[in-house]
Image (cartoon, rainbow, N blue to C red; front, side, top):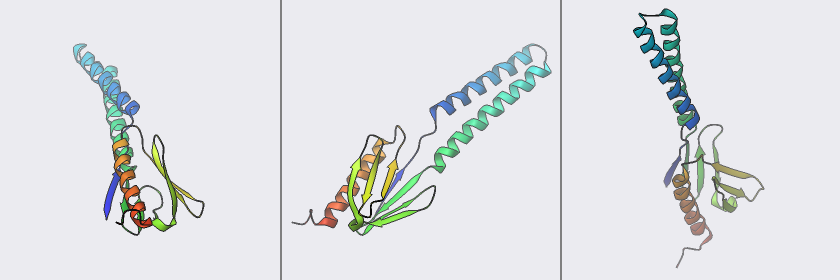
Length: 145
């Protein structure tokens, strides 16, 4: 049995905006200090820093919650992640296709299971794809000598 985790990276836009908000907030706090504790600048600076930190934490938690774990064994696969869990047998898989951003298991009943990864997680998909191919080959008797 093997386990593969496909992770989503935090949004670069969200992280960039969070950094910008924190930077602007810190600059406003420093300006308020230089201008003898201007209450309005201090309040806006604190709000900017708080919003930036909140956005950073939200982006990180969202990416973490989108993590998917795929467990493969000689009989089939189990997928656990956000949404409902999926499982199936290798005998029920008709073919597997690999696209630029993911892997699709085409089941013999006409349904599909798509595993999509954001930019930067391609190595996770490469390892998963090799493992799926090896298990399908074994299931169909291609690896027997």
